[in-house]
Image 1 (cartoon, helix red, strand yellow):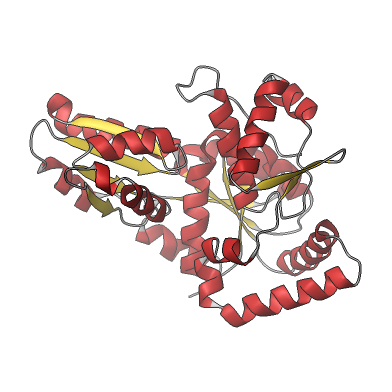
Image 2 (cartoon, helix red, strand yellow):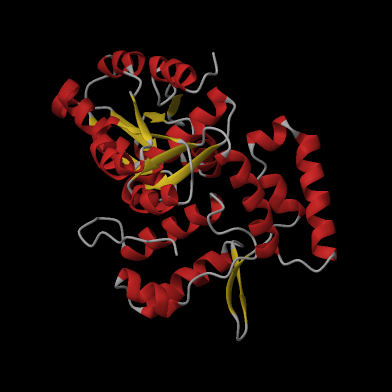
Length: 327
């Protein structure tokens, strides 16, 4: 069972924290289409939230078209129809459209044979896992509370290395490593000690990645007019905290700094209405553009939107290629 963690001292409401974590688990296919979500009782025991709060979150996910309630059975991840597939089309699907169509066709055939979506996923993943464990498996890990940082690393590694990359919460890393015969764990230097403590007894190597120095973005920030408002948007709360400290050290109180995780629409809208300049990570850029467009008529002047460079430094990418024998 996926572990959800609620931070009681966070300014983000507990229900929003749970909503965001459930939405991420579904988007990352930790909960695939057709999967039955935990009951309100199970989540209440795990998170400490009231069952009414969890029911409210499930209703919000249902209204968003992400899940569906089946009377007397539970809450299930909703398979997307044609319209949903267009909206959810990933860069990988666009890069390999024929492979995507082949997967959909075979999936339909298996359903006709009587397999459930959950059974199909188990069959497919068993085959994929067997092949991965025959070679070097790349596991990216980060704490659940900052899984967004891990998602940034995983996305960029998969794009750069052209190999399968699996994102694993740090709290589940030991369990995953027990089930694999070989592999490489990748994480940020911020989490290296915790990752090594888990991986070392299992003789699995851990490679830290260095974060891009953001020199270009820093130069731009130093040139912003005094008293202007700078917005920072990312999927990673840890990235936002670090970026806010860096900007404050550069400009002190001469800039108003606002931050928002991309899935927190309330804070994102407030940031868009106030900031003259917004810096977004690449993973958040599409949603930020869409949010700006949706309120464009309310803005006197749309903010300048800047996409930051890759999260991982070029040297770390080169090191990974050498370690995995890809160059």
